[in-house]
Structure formats: structure tokens, C-alpha cells
Image (cartoon, each protein chain N blue to C red):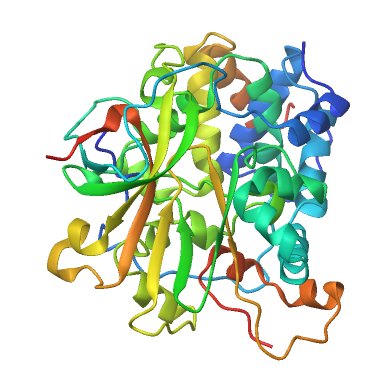
Length: 116
Length: 198
Length: 103
């Protein structure tokens, strides 16, 4: 029942990836301009508030992963694409943002809409 | 009275930990030998010397560096490092034009297989709140001054993808061996708050 | 949730304090809390997202005024009781016994 010493050490090397082996269509392509949704969930989310409503560019598609907002509340894995999205500091912080500063964040499909 | 290794009363948190562990062991839910082994692994065996070896290899071997930047997980695993909190690795390269720095604003996500467990400052509110908003100010506090036209990228680790910085190789190291190079690589340079100085 | 853990951009959190040659663990109890992570996880009572959310549910004053491994401890205690692996009564009784030196 309890994992023993050998199993524990094996587990540290194997890890526990959150990648899901499922075929899920991505909603966005690399290069897409997106706008972060204005969400205010009462439960768990991995969207930081500082990104809400801001426009960024999809730089990379990491593939399909577990969606924490669902998984933390008995909603299953809800597998979807996670992307590296780049935001300028000026976009996020306004005037106070550094001219040549950028923030790159991992963002799930459900956190974004296409930017008009 | 039960024998005690303590010469002072236990603090509240010590009582809580002892209570929880003993209860879980009694119920057969956890094995203390597994707990001991995990402590030993992360206290003594896994740490930033792993990441330093990855960096040194990338500095001396351009093909390895390409593999590292293309598929961090696989390239890091070539050197024998893998596992928990590093299952999906991305290595970001610092260059004269682009400087990368890492944070997890929401908690403490950090690439354990290459850097070990994170330092307290990385996990604490001051760093997590400020580096995302004033990265140049924070870097300055760490003694790092960037040219104004260098692009600075702050990576916020919100997913289970884990990041590591490949720092710039400092000048004057052309004749160093791979081991000598690895010895130069600091943990802080692989987070991105400092550059490596010779 | 709009919790205080969502720290990006907040002011007033104080200076970044760096401890030179910081040890991996600052106390024996921190070691035990860390070491219990994987074994408790392996019991399958909760997933990593539930663990993070349990920490987020600590409430702002507790979150800001307790240390990192106390956050983990809080999450273990909360989730193991919520998921029925242990009861709050058992835990309280065991704490009392430990406090009296009986364990």
C-alpha cells in the first residue's frame, strides 16, 4: 500500500508528467494574436490576474496537458493545448512597463480568445 | 515516559508534523524509509551541479546545445537527469541580445532534476511579486545590470513545463575543460538573476 | 481564485532576502514535510492541482505569515481529512499525544 524506498526513488526519476496522450485539436497556431479571457473563477486556476484581458502572441505549442482548473475540482483531465504566449511589459503594466521587457507565460486553450 | 531526542518542548509545527507522520505510518499509508530516502536524495544528491554539467556540455558541444534547445527533456536526460518537476523541460538561451529570467508567481515551480530544490527567496512573496513587474530592478539587486536595449524575457512557470536558463559563456574561458566550465556555473545564473563572471 | 498567492505585480511584499549558502532544509520538520510529499501523493487521495489549491485556500493572512513548508503541511492535513484518509479527530488526538510526549 505505502510506496517503499525503491519505489519512491524510482518515482523521482520517472516523474509524473501532466502531458496527456490524447489527440486534441489546438485552437491556436504559432504566431496567433490572442486576448486573455476575463475569468474570475472561485476555484483553482493557473491564469495569473495580471494577464486578464491582455493581448499576446502565441510563440510555441507545448502539446496537450491536464487542465488544472478542472482537475482540481473533480472535473477530470479536460486535456487541451498549452502554449507559450509572449506579452510585452507595456501591454501588461502600461506606461510603467519596461520598453524592452516581455513576459512569457504558459497558457491553456481555455484561457484565450483570438484577438480581434 | 517515552524517550525523547528533544531537550526542549516541540514547537507547534513540530507537533503537527510528528503527529501526521506517525498517524500515516501507523495506518500503513506511508513508509518512513521512503521518506528518509527522498530527503537524502534532494538534500545530498540532486542539486544545481546537475544543471551546471548540462550548461558546460552545451558550451563545449554545439550539437548538444542544439539538441538541448530543441528538446530540453531529452538532452538533459542524455546526461542522466530526469524526473519529478522536470518531466517537460525547456531550456532558454541567454545571448548578448536576449536575457531570460525565471519565476513562478503563483507558487514555486522549479526544475528539480537540474537545479534541485529552490532557495527560499525564489519561493517567497517579494521575488514572485516583483520580478514580473520590475525585472531590471530585481536583477540590479542581484548585481546584474543589463544594457537598456537588451530584450529581457521573464518566464512565469504556470504549467508543468519547467524552464532552465542556459547562461552566456563568459569571455576568457576558451581554454577551460568541461569540468572547469561546470565549476563556474552558478545556480543563480540558471535562474537568470545573475550572469556568470570569471 | 483571486487569492493572495497570485502575487504577480503586487507591491508591499518587502525586500528580497537572500541567505548566503542557504541549506536545503532549515529544520528537521521541514525535511519530514518534504520527504512525505511523494509517499502521500502516491496514496492517490488527491492530485497536484488539488494540492496547490489547498494551499491557495489557506487564506491570505495565513498564507503570507507562514513559511513554505508550513503551506505543504497545511495542504496535507486539509486534503487527507477532506478525502477521508484520516479524520480530524484522529489527527487532533495524535497531536495531543505528541504534545504530551507520549509518542
